[in-house]
Amino acid sequence: MKAIQFLGSVPRYLISKIIGLFYQPIFWSPLSNLQYREVADPSLPNENWAKIKVRYGGICASDMNTILLHSSLALSAFVSFPFTLGHENAGTIAELGSQVKGFREGDRVVVVPTLGCQVRGFPELCPACQRGDTGLCERLAEGEIAPGFLTGFCRDTGGSWSPYLVAHASQLLKVPPAMDDENALLVEPFAVGLHAVLRNYPQDEETVLIIGAGVIGICMVAALRSLGSKARVIVLAKYPFQEEVVKRYGVDQVIHLKRDYYQELAQALGATIRCPPVGKPVVIGGAEIVYDCVGSGTSLDDGLHFTRSGGKMVLVGLAGMAKGVDWTPIWFSEIEIKGSWVYGTELYKGKEIHTFQLALDLMAEGRVELAPLVTHRFQLDDYKRALAAVTNKGRSEVVKAVFAFE
Image 1 (cartoon, helix red, strand yellow):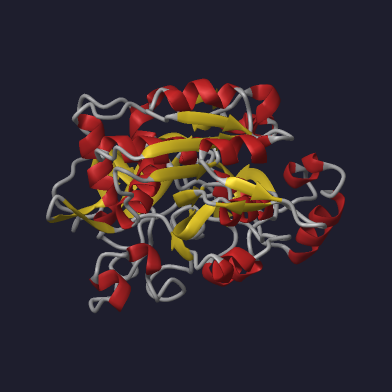
Image 2 (cartoon, one colour):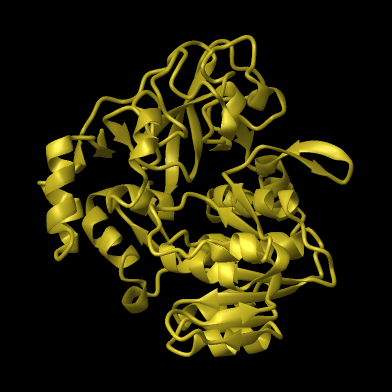
């Protein structure tokens, strides 16, 4: 079968890093680590696994960070090369190990991408996996499969940027019959939003600022409203076309990232601005909670500036290596910084539930409809055009791009 893989070659990394400073297509050229090539179908590691025929494989910002070499090199300690990209997924079961119970071939499923202790064959769970935070597993480089922090970053599991991947029985969740494949695909980013909100829930009288109106930013708004939050929600969006999309999900105000956005955002937040003799303006006041869904140096710096004294800034998802961040507001305004990484076991209405299952339930109840976010579909062999579109959203107006398989 054909797959899009990341090789992990140091010479290719160096060539791409240098040429990529002035020629972005180098990152998906024959000289790069990203290769579209023939690979063997992934095999079941043991009888507790299933093979999944992929219907959709989503193109996520973390995938793009990997391709564009923006991710921290520290993460390479927890991956195994070559890996087939793609952790956002929706598909059907094509093959079942004899020990997989409760599923049949042909069942529509989503795969929870985390590769924790149970997936890796450890009978005794690490502290993080014991409490249900499999994304924080302490054995990501150990066990019966190769290192990998998620499906799509492990050479043994495959990924959704190929026709087939394999998943442990504990990773499988059935898609409700009435749910379409587009909504099923978006369970993963929606679960990212739900996890960040449930672990950092605003009070109804508070104001929330979401930096970024990509899929994760939109899913943050959808998570807040589907969970019943009445907090005032302001979104800082980079592209004008994103405003219409994010407004469908209950945002109160959208501000565009333009030259004078500092003044407009301060006014929206009821904050004041003081200008030092040199450097960026200083903001007095701001939002009680800021969710940064971009992870760039600029977004982190803006988030710190626009978090109210004593407030909280939440870093959502996989950020890149940020530069040019002034950390002064952390101590000067006593801001709490909190990371939010993927999903886990949540406390919801007094009961424990996995974030993926909660996402499926909320969608099945009709409390959120995310399928319209899928705006661009590509065949796998058209990956260069897909990646070019995703990296040029201002022109392509991509919200969510996917690889589609028949």
